Length: 114
Image (cartoon, rainbow, N blue to C red; front, top):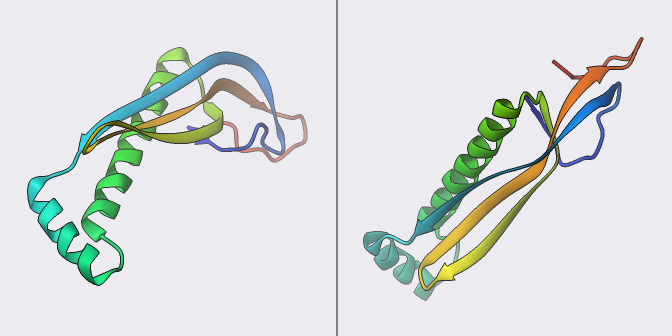
């Protein structure tokens, strides 16, 4: 599966547009991590516990979007974007969305379509 933030891939053309696909997850903070985060807040710097949690959340949302695209028969997702929003105090949604398409190689082109 090709996933890109661009609207086209050199050497390929969109044969079919299948529509919007998305994946999301909602995560809450962990009390134990909050204590560590608060201590780090006092001295400054990165909070690695939250950095790791957000990276895992983005990957989960991305995987869910790809799964939805595969169910539609897509071999690529173009114009992929991430969005984060606060749901409530201590809980955030990570949304990944894009356009599911079927790509094909241009004749004579060296594209990345499957």
